[in-house]
Image (cartoon, rainbow, N blue to C red):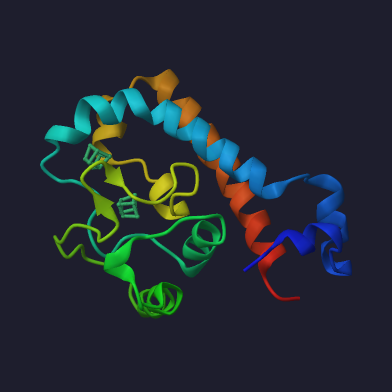
Amino acid sequence: MDLSHRRRAPCARHQEQYHTVTRPLHEYRRIQRELRRQFEPFTKRYCPQCTTPCCRTPARITPADILLATTHGWDPGPAFEGRDLVAETAATCATWLETDEIPPSGQPCEFLGPQGCTFPPDLRPFGCTVYICPIMLREMDRASLARIRRLVQELTRAHSMLLKLISPA
Ligand code: SF4
Ligand code: SF4
């Protein structure tokens, strides 16, 4: 899905948002990169020996995450050929609407590769990107945690804006 035409000719409902936010996807990716940079010292140190790794099914992936990544060059690889990942993800998300809590299956996320997540580094699923795990909460120093929380808030705002802009009027 090519979203570029929406920047050139926003509908009336979105006119005001375009005046206040320029290049919304650029901003979303920039904050993702900054957030990852802040997470990195922690993930390098703690994730390899984590006994309760968080990249497990069901992962916090939405159809919008899949669309954003695939329309900007992401190819999930031959293992996913012929699958409609947007429809599959939508179906999974729909089941969440009926539950208060989604128990982890224990199975690794299917997008987890030998080098980590296979999504583009600055277009990871929003829900994965903003997750602050209990080990981080326990081990991270207060200043780092505060920076990460601020970036999570920024990313949440940028994400809401993106969803508004790509949703039908
Ligand atoms: S739960 Fe925390 S420490 Fe464990 S893999 Fe996930 S981010 Fe790393
Ligand atoms: S999509 Fe990526 S970050 Fe999210 S659970 Fe799967 S491997 Fe982890």
